[in-house]
Length: 392
Image (cartoon, rainbow, N blue to C red; front, side, top):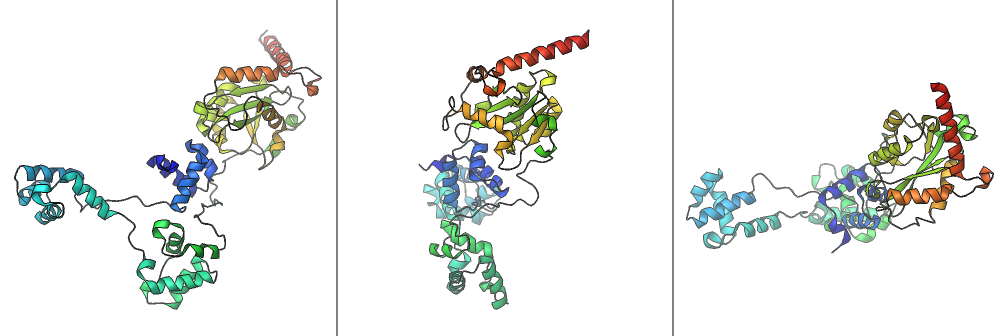
């Protein structure tokens, strides 16, 4: 069995929906919780073009109606009597009975299976039915014309001849989709991009696939950069396999680390927001001032997170991990405990707390050889003292 054949119809629909939004296959795999190779195999099999779902005409008999026909025939009813009950034309009933074994051998399941087979698509395409049109298209593809140029040229050159008109989408389908492959596969090399699979859109004109209303790191207060004021954090997801991860938080002044699990390791935006909020609100208010994150879509609910916790989120520039240097260095240390390729879907919070305690107990040169746990304890004492003084 092919790996992609295990995909459910809902998962297939989500794959095509996300490809229309311009998401890469690796991002799609993470979101639906499947291996990247499975998604790639399915898209390659379809040529990068979403298959049309089979549709049954309302004029065709349904499985329920065929059951009624079978029962009626067993009871000795005439086709006219059965048709009257089903509110169908007698000729529709008699034709279905005649083509599926007659009155004595008619079986509803076999009749439905035969009808499904006759309904199978795709039928022959326009290129397959017109050798002249196919010859013109192939000749111009060999001249390195694009399908759009060929379609436009045909409309001008053969104006008034609808049999010689074809859309560029139909040309692409014949090149990419195996079941529609009336054009020779070697003609793909004449396309400018030379892809063997129809590619998803990469540029999204309306901002889809990007985090909305984000505040960039350039607007972050200066006190964050010089590490003079505690309570500013850097965060990220540490991936195990492509479909699972854990959350990491590092305080910039003390290098104190906090880790949190995600449900089954999956990092959808809602799960990340909920678990991140649960983790950070355990801190006193004076130690949760801001959070710096990259532009991963797992943080698309950042506005709601800020409303719930009061913590402002600042986003790094694209491809600039150095802007979260403390977190990047800490993630490198975490690889000693969570190597790449290891599934993190079943890691418990107790395991994460143990690893965090070990790293927080290591002395750091940047902290004058104190450890992050000691520095955080000092801050917590100061916070508690300040709170007590205010109350008094």
